[in-house]
Length: 426
Image (cartoon, rainbow, N blue to C red; front, top):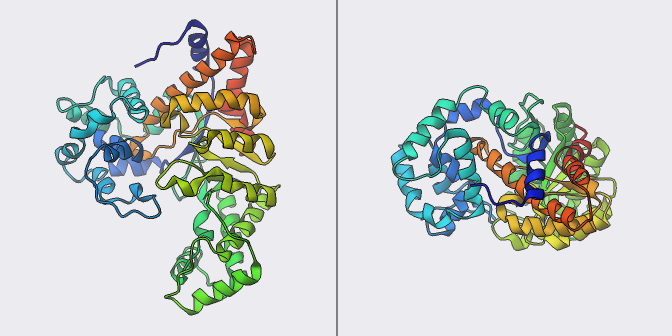
């Protein structure tokens, strides 16, 4: 499964084994949740990356899609990860389609991980039960430490699972900020009120709720909030206040997307994040109807909120060049390669090679696995691929006479560890 590296690239890849890593993006619930829910090979393959490829290749699906994000809530996905349903039944859903995605980069991370942890080169009708048995036996307290620390040399992982009950050593939380701002109805306001245990009679009350929530999260060890890049309209407090009153008065009223209330709430929350030194992580590019996730939509926010730190996720794929220019031009924008190495290694390598020309190197974060609890093993495979990609990019620079081996290893250490540590004040 190891790709052919030339001697320079191989030397770099081997040197990267000793680099301590800060994993800059995961979706890991606390370990006890993984142990309680159970794992098997179908759960691992169902995680929306290989799961998306399986569905794209023709696997039937029942989906309750919401704005292109429905892989996480589709009936098919929820069935595949439900270990109470017999393994044979769930395996029969995916096995006819596995051959269609076998050579994709999503699948490669799975196969690398299964080989490393359980000793299997293939996943098929003859061995899926055996692999699943091995996964179940390993699924006990300490599994995260084995995967992250022992196998990956990950010092800590920034994780987003909508909760803060972590040990703050191996896992450190970010929390979703966008539900506070993407407000279209009274029902959504009531959901936020229930979460905070108070009422918002007007827009100022609601802003106080947001601020209280952010302070609470900060006190609980949260280091950032996550939003999704999106087109916004002009922010106007008077219009925002009027719309807030309208949806409070009329439970049937649903605001359009985008709307002035939404834009105003984003502006206010981003300023609060700056004041509390919370990084704003931004999903850009890949997923569903990705037209709405163009990283260029973040530029007005970068300009309007110069004191807010933005961590721009996923290289903005497929807009990798535009994202590079954003990182070059705006001091408050960092560029995060999380997820990117398994979306497309070649796109990631090509973009990173250009980014070295464009972007100050202290603005680039090398890795985030972007996996959930039931697919945590895949972090290993993804990190393996990330190190291959970076070794090939920096190896080319060495061969071109643009840097030394020592420079290249030092640069990788910055990207894998120092840059995310400094950005998130870890």
